[in-house]
Length: 131
Image 1 (tube, rainbow, N blue to C red):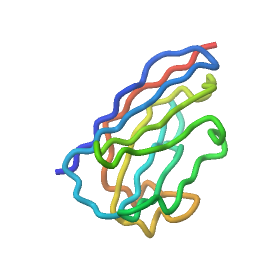
Image 2: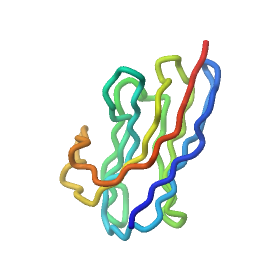
Image 3: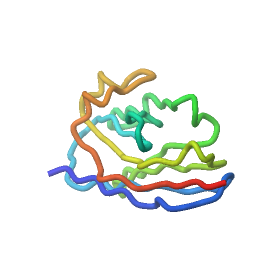
């Protein structure tokens, strides 16, 4: 049973930083996609960043234009934990953030990752940025 548990959300002021974590327990995927999505009230869920991991190295990393240069996605394969470092936060970054993973890497080996091809989601962690 794959379980993803996010943590690290909270409230910060504009310009601040947060680091989100996603602990993965149960998955035994050799290669996989993993990433972060977010959903603000009244808006659709949007991709923030994702990685295509082939079991040895990161093959592909991509970010939404809105977060490029401010957010960094990473993982610790020993701890089975993924991270999203968020710097220079803006009010428009306020949302519920979800981590996700799926072994169907053909759907994430490019600059998009459609949620319909994601089988595993975390429960979400709230990020609130105030001015």
